[in-house]
Image (cartoon, rainbow over all chains, first blue to last red; front, side, top):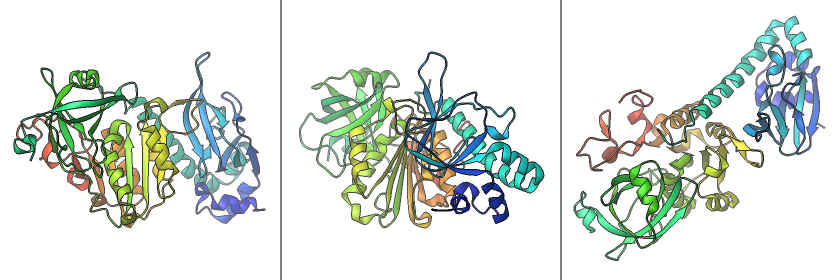
Length: 153
Length: 279
């Protein structure tokens, strides 16, 4: 079985991260799997973890009371699921729903926040990796809001 | 030589053989010359001017297979008076056609290289003839990938063909929609995200893009991140075309006339114009 450290090093999210930081992260990591159809987390729950996806497919879903659930993004191998663990009040903004058998490394957000507080260089390295994810999601949301495929009025 | 080629401003009458609905606002017309004989030869990416007599005309890309003898095919989105009228034409009805016009996709020049096709919405229609040509000459190309984005699963075009292409072992087909209900098991997200899933040789890859301008701009950013050079990126531009031969100036785009110098441009030809608020 592959070690957590080896799996983390190979993931694009942690590309070129110094080994000492990878080892620090291993202390907060666990190998997890989610069967198809299960919810990894629900909107409003505490954002205790984030997930480095190794295989499978996860839908980020939002819903508005009685209306139908809408999928706003799907994530898969190579992607990172969740960044609310980094931003107070550390609550989920959407549901994460495994569309197929999904394997991931779960990283304990509180554990990592403590380690980042102790070692700001680790915090900087993680921030430099998380911010592009947030930026990407923001740009994608802008494009979705613009409804670029709709008929021009 | 057809009359429309002899006199590019004179529409020739064509009879509608089939009017097939693709989505709630997109349909495909198959037509043949009223006088008989074959439709003029066209190259992938070219367009025709379609006339509804008494209503007006619209520039529509040809969406059929240039490698086979078949009725002339156009996939059209309802977006104005003329396209609304075209949507109503029944088999047996007659419309006018001028063309084909415009600079085609560089499929011949892409031989020996990997080819990425990136389509957004109705932009798959002008790229489909390019895909047919690539597939008819499959051994002349490296890896071929199609990335197709649409608004919702209900807006996806050519579903049965996408399924056939996806079943091949020598093509990569990735489809994504902007939003979906829970019963959609495919990808959701912007089409540009799909590009990171492709495997291609950046120094030896040609990219063909067709879709809304903002989607093409974001796609180009992603391609550049993946080290594809500006001279290897081609895009199909859309403007209000009228004469289709560069006389009237309706489709002027900076120093270019889209009808005559395009609609397909190499990215570095239009790089300075893309994204400008007024051109």
